Image (tube, rainbow over all chains, first blue to last red; front, side, top):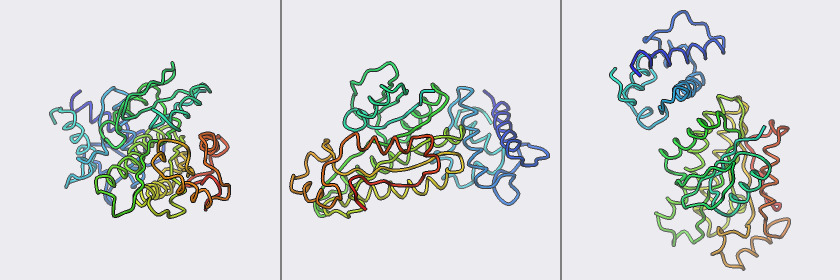
Length: 97
Length: 232
């Protein structure tokens, strides 16, 4: 698995969540914010996306944990953008960013 | 459809009884305990783990989901008691009890809730004790850990209720298990006198409350703790 595949899985999971919940999105890319005032998600939406992303990887037989101490205690949140989340997962899997 | 049920602490006692009963009813049961378990059944899977070991719990629950693609029920049965005066309770004992009773419930609930949220359905059953309601002397650490479980039950019920998941607790009276084997008989008798119905509980009493929570019709009941024996 490479960083592009990781980004694709993350982006697809978020797109699916937005479609299911009728959240209007124009474009999803690595700069799309997942937290903060510009985010496309509210706090519950972020929780759902974390679950969706974890299980999407599990469906590919890849195990990632987004509720680990590392994820939650990092000074700069790994959930700030799609790109940041993908890079965080890449680091967890030992994949080059 | 047979339910996929995770029960912690299935080596003996109530956990073992529940596992056997649900297996006999056709459910698929995943159990765990720190020490080896000799329960053998074609629909039973066992792993040795400490419920407070985050890494192990995450991997264990993930594996159940990978194998079954769903988790219908979690019964946080694993528990540890410590009954002693506060001045005779070492810190290490307090930590062990909190870790098993609260942290184990927290970790299993968090991990199972992830998958239950995906499937928009699930039941989580926790264990409290009448010692919380009765503020029993000599059970400071044990009842505090269970009070924390009751609070977890209520807040978790609120946080995941909209996903079709209910979270409830059962609060047993003393039952004739290893948990109370070191409690003097006069203490047990005193406790029984504070119940409306003055007898020891049974495994069947506990299962009856759990079965009530698990009924499909109970999907509007969440965040509750039912004490056995008429304690309030």
